Length: 451
Image (cartoon, rainbow, N blue to C red):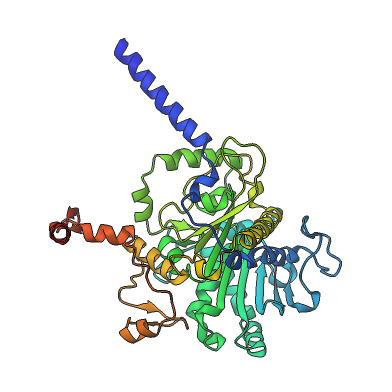
């Protein structure tokens, strides 16, 4: 009797501990180890949110759905080259617009998000099964890929003509929200792999900003294209964190909070190693920007801060059980909080700017951070992960074997001399024939002799 009572107590304590950890988990924990973003790299996000919001208003000269903070769209109606409505695209994709921002020298294609009252958008999301669509050495969402192909086929000539007209100083920016974010992310992959259709535009002139991104590509592709795709997540947004395929979420008969709780329970019992080993599992794409504005056991919203990284592990794997999981997905909230965060970053930069000789620079450039993420994916044995030891991405987007001449003439910042954790692990440990880690005795003995 005492043994059974003790067992019951152990089970109850275990369940209580799990419930406490899950109910008190905050979205801020996902990025607590990430470095802060700089205002220069985050500057496009608020105005691209407003470009997406422009899809909701047919008359930009007299907008009805202007962002609540600014009360206006900073978009010149004369710069809108083309608008595609539901009548134009039918059931193939959401509406979108093509806009030329002469002030920032950008050609923007912005796709709106999911329309909750339109059945065609749900059908687009549910046009997928786990492992259904292979592409570029990984897996992608089948329905979103078809929508990306549809838009790119319609607008290739328009975008190419605009790039020719405005010249090499202009960048090509693809942006979208929710459903549109997955579409533009896969459009970017298609565009990067078919740059000949755009007069061989350099890879560095192509950028994608996925706002409240859907999980649309496998982990190897999400890391591979992190130099051109940027995902923006507001605090506890449910969509980037929900590993369950989108077709199950929106096709479920359960209410969304109940389904999220069941997903949370299931994923708690699933080991992280199994998640990484499944090549069909989809993730939010590219480099991640996380806007954090709430913390555990604190009421209300705090001044937002933005953190950024190219994570391989911990790419928003935990569903957050909070009252804001759905509201943080709204494009209006993302626009408002991203604008606040940008203004705070600029004020902080002005107040804390040191003399030029003492200016602190990032230890890694974007290119080096991207290479480190690719190497980390290879170290974790992520299926089909790209290997940069054999080829190197150049500025024009082509790939070529690394050479001494390239390393000498490169303008990228040199290494600071600090050994990273991954490099240290490679020096201290080697793998035996069975693939297990063993201590590198030769390296340790050499270090002892040197000392």
